[in-house]
Amino acid sequence: MNTGKLLLLNFKTFLRESSLGVIAVVVLVWAFSSGKIPRSFMGVEGNFVFYSLFVMMLVGYAVMVSVSFTGLIKRKTSRFYHLILVLPERPSRYLFIESLPALALAEVASVLVGVILYRSSCARPSWLFLPILGSSLFIFGLSMLSLAVTLQVSNVRTVNLFLFLLLFALARVPRYVLENGLHVSLATDILFLTAVAVAIIGPWALSSLNPERVVLSS
Image (tube, rainbow, N blue to C red; front, side, top):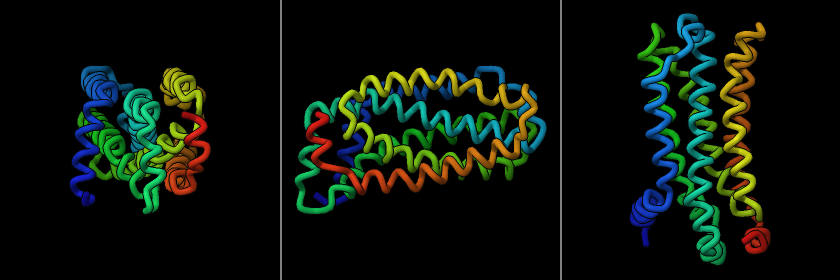
């Protein structure tokens, strides 16, 4: 089977098995389109860039957690990934293809939310460059890191539940930064460096996957 047919089959299977991730995208986009966005983050470039970058990364994170909690775990328990690990070619190539649907879904949700934030403010188009770049790097790495962790951790449902609950704590970070007078530019730099780090760690984690740990964790 060539790569194009494999990608198409993977996307169809992903949409069927990861309905929770698709629902998460719809809910997140609806929430930001109908909710009240803090005005303190909308009028100043530095504040807007920080808030948009944080929210777009958080949306990507939420989609990844939702996808991992449904489709990835289902495939793992069915030992689907064991077949990939015994292929004669490098497993990382097929595992990367496996991560593409989640990556695409998270990227679409993130960009849509970014556009909503932009249209709801008086921001200039150039203000969206850093948020889109940073969130894309973050989602790229997180899609592979999420798959690598899911495959190698035995109590993956507990881990995903913890990551889901962490969303509620992370959602309070922008307001905490503003209310406590923290340097927004420094917070933005930390976010972007985090995105770059995840973009580097993700491919490394997937390429250095331990087949024995995958089998033992199933």
